[in-house]
Length: 482
Image 1 (cartoon, rainbow, N blue to C red):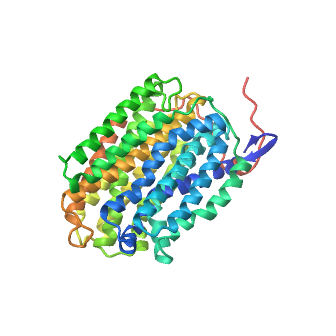
Image 2: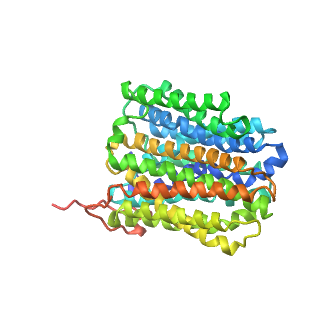
Image 3: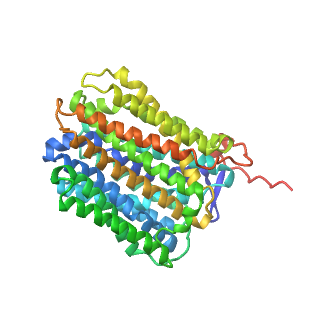
């Protein structure tokens, strides 16, 4: 099967690759650095708070600028902004690699997140606009699998690279991928436009600074004191800025986030599930990867290999859910995914001790992997199910933004639980604080499962069989039935 780009016929698999490859690198860098954190702690003298910001500077910048990138893509061309994002991400990755202290690395990670903000939401929008309708569920399924894989295998790839070379190499590997991704996007993706509205820069500032205020207050809570002026002031200001953002979006003629989208039940609930799911899951991953190294003495690569049952499952399951979702419905898959993921995290937390065997933790890793694989693609489908084509970019951008906010808040909150329980980056001071932290993450994911019960069923009224072999072979379009 092929799709059209001007007068040329582009194979569907090539369009999927062009949209998914840079998105894979953007999602990979959410957690690829986690395996390197103990090494960065030793090499750069980074504190626990520094380590949080090395991760969260990326996710916060990612979240803050995503909707702005969507608006710029609508106005100036989605492929143009997509390619600009790839360029920024590539340059910023090189800056991360040459950073000589925690502050420089944190700043470079924030710049890297800016590039990722243009890549992630526009990749799905460009993909949806590049494939025929009957291949859309499959394409979204593959895209969701690659997205989930990028996040999930971050610790494994990071561990392998750190052990084989050094922590700087986890950023250098982005450079050749960026060089390949630009001509690939030019070759396979159309430069579509949306509504040419004025960029809502004030909205970006209100939302970005609001989330930053909340995360900063949470991160500083244990050290500065939860009742301190610094923490209370930061949390209050962050909440006030977010309220101002909502008011702004309800009144401006060119909103960064059209609030009317939330009138759709599928869109609203899918976004709540996405945010709470990433909050619990990736906050727990941040704690668990360091547990395997700091407490159990595994190398970065060994820690990544230990999580492979978690990381490999989404690669297999997520693309299949794209095929089955029209038949069984997205709600069933999302609820099942959240239940499996929550059960996996509970199993890991309740069996975690300093000398716990790998086989004891293995069922938790498997359940978590199955759960993530079941949820990724159906959540994307549920977000876009009732959206008009002109709203696809905004809807996708909103979903991606809330997912990243969930990651940032999850890491901040679960690390606050860890440090509040007396946790330290030592073999004897880690487990007692890690257990309640992971239990909080599991509970949040369980809440996401409850919310998902109220989603629409999400079944297609009619499904069209898909021949996977057609993805690589140009075929004539079917003639519509009379």
